[in-house]
Length: 346
Image (cartoon, rainbow, N blue to C red; front, top):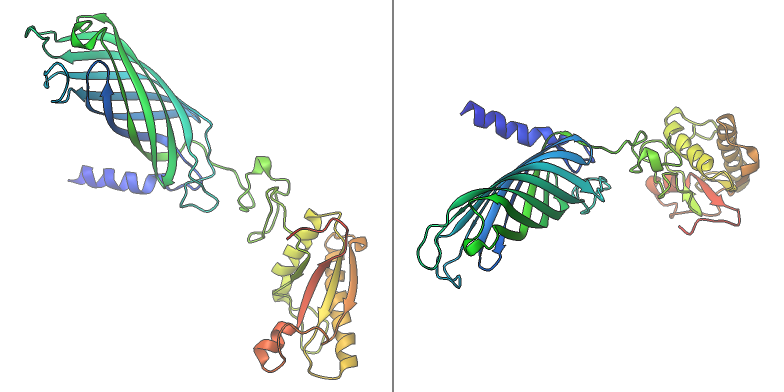
């Protein structure tokens, strides 16, 4: 009882590392149709151990039974095989399972050559026993889709052949049979390969042109912060009736700085806006001073002043009606507006 509980816990907890689509150990099960001169249902169980990403030692047990509707009328013929070999995973996507952030359904194309034994059990048309065991080999190819962590589902085709021994001949021809159908894989243990994404922006480090984007930044396919044509820098606040930036604004300012660093050819207007409280001239001066404070902070943190211009709009361009404090808070804002000719299409 304890052993089964430990096994269940292992399977449930072990495949927890993110963005891994095959693990150190992978259990396989498949079912389909046995096809040769006769046909019938078949299935297999397997296990592989990846000793390095994409390369694994593989073991598989297969059973196939002739269906009752087989042409020779011998429904009890069966084929068994025990094979050991390697499994190679090609075209191996590891962006994560479909139910993970930035994941997808793409998995891996694999090829598994094996050697082992075949055992054929049956009788021929004149009721002679043709049972026997042969040395043989197996080849299998399939594709696994990353459905939901830690399960992959795919299709496969497998061919087993006996090359030496007493199982050759009989209704199995030269001791060969093929099985095709649907397979399910379950990963356990440590991930065989994971994406290295130091800034956690969803773009692997090897392909990340901007590897230091602040967490939570919106990035493009390069891994660089997207600089929209117009964007409100939500989170930048000032002391009452002052251009002094409050300390809580720093995360937003860091994201704004990263956006400009990631787009060094971009030129932006930093626009300051206020609500309609107070005189219009005062609001215009205050909005300009606040925009200048943001530009000064960005310049102090590595942004060339040539990338920035400053403009105050006062209360002339409200985002919402100035009829309540929540609406006035929307109107008190700092905005980026791109001025360069290579504006983002976003």
